Amino acid sequence: MGNLREATHALVDGVRYSHAFERLYSRDDIADIEPLYLTTRWASLAEQGPILVRLRGTGLPDEVLRDEQGEWPRALTWLQTDASSAELADHLRQFVTFRGTGQHEKLLRFADPLVTRHWLASHGNAVPADVMGSVHKWWVAEWSPSWGVASVLAWHAFQSDESSRFGEHDERPLQNVLGAPQLAALEAVTRWQFKEQLAEHFQDSASQAWQALPPEGRGEWMDARIDDAMAWGASTERQIAIWLDLSLHWGENFMSASDGLYLHWIARTAQAAGLSRQERLYALDVWSRTPEAMALQGKASSRTISENEVSDD
Image (cartoon, rainbow, N blue to C red):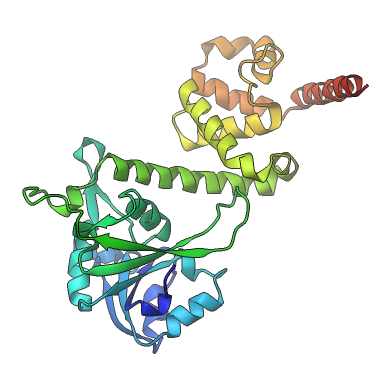
């Protein structure tokens, strides 16, 4: 982990640290404050974008280490450099955007620790010097996901590898140097965030069914169900969320089982044939909460209990 008190700067995510300017400017343990968007065409989002601050003393690291369950670990990362704040800001601005699939320019929200962790880790054991620039160490918090087994928060230090560079003859600007591993890492962040939302929803609205899944297997269960939904044809987060909700309550084969929810609904719905696949999923979701459907679920549960009693004998 290293010593966080060696950090010279912090990179704050204004989205995760609300009212960032007011709160940062009120501190006496911070010197320079450099909003990275300020000199770009996203200047209007300067308070929501990456905000580079130079530390004065160890007040902020000490505060974060005392309260690792607070908002700070998920709102900032730490950097150690010999460069000035202006030089470091100029280097980091190279990564404000990147070109994804189809060459569409996108913002790389590298101030978000979750994004930073996946992005830097996608380079392997050591991050290329081109990416790190003057940064010697870049500390990022690692925490357990809400769907998994709780673990103690830790700080991982990424280090620059001078032997690893993009190449002397690579003239592409750095914002375009996102290879397949980096793009896959950003996709993993999107899935992580979606799974967090689903886990929170299930914990609030389907606690009993959710708690019945072993914590160490929930992540794999969610990944498998998301893949099932996409293979079936679900194309939006809402459709995928419905698929997982139905899987949680009716079993992962609710769509294919001969006595599953879907075939029961088809048998009772004359207009089903005229609906698109996605419309069928929405209608199935609505029907799954009707008294008729709930009665079928109750019969299935009773049948399972009886079968278990017989097998136990």
